[in-house]
Structure formats: C-alpha cells, structure tokens
Image (cartoon, rainbow, N blue to C red; front, side, top):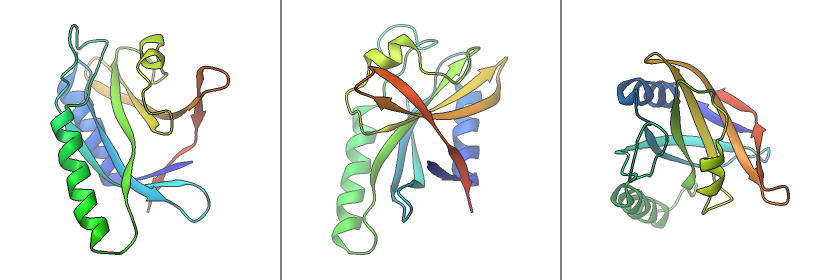
Length: 148
C-alpha cells in the first residue's frame, strides 16, 4: 500500500490537468511505514523531458532528481526519519491509469512505485498505484490510500 497526503494528490492532479494533452511527471518522496506500507511525504514536480511525443511518454528531468537527492541527503544527515525517492507519478491523457507497454519498457528502478493519473478531456478522473512484478514482467496494482 502507498499512502499519499491529500495536498500531494491535489498537486499531482493539478499537474496532470495543466500538462494535458501531454503527460506530466514528477517524483514521490517518502519513507517506509510501520505496517510495511509506503508513506509519501512530498512530491517533486518535474518538466517532462522525454524525447518525442509527450502525449504518450514521460521522463523526469535528471536535474530535478539530483536536486531532490541532494536535499534528502542533507535532511537525512541532520537526523530524524530517513526519507528517499519512493516512486514517481505521471499522467495518461485520454487513457486509463494503467501502465502501458512503454511504461514497462521504461522500468529502470524496479523498487519504485508508479502512480498514474488518468486525464480525460483535461480533467483528472482516476489515479492508481502500481509496482513491478519482476518475476512476471508486469505491473501489479497496489492499494493507494489518502494519508491523514
């Protein structure tokens, strides 16, 4: 299960609607929860720097990722609960929030959660979370809950 605070969900939906008819993307920052779940504490929106058609592909800007990693390194060095990049999000304009064959081809970090937002005619209409099932070479849906 992945738990995402309502303000983060709203940020993701707004990014998806703003990017329409292109895909939006960004990173999910968080930690492991007490019950084996993942708790998102922040999102880091990114420009979509994919080569080609942004209507059916995405790539998080490497600079955004490096900046997030540096902030996390500093914060984690100060103590407290360690946080890390736990996943990323992107939108599917006029398609369901299910991973595509292209998404499966683009998995470079199998431990990350994929959150996908469906956007129909400019409006976010659904959001689902997935994890790679490496043994079956497919994504499995995981529960997405709104964190308090």
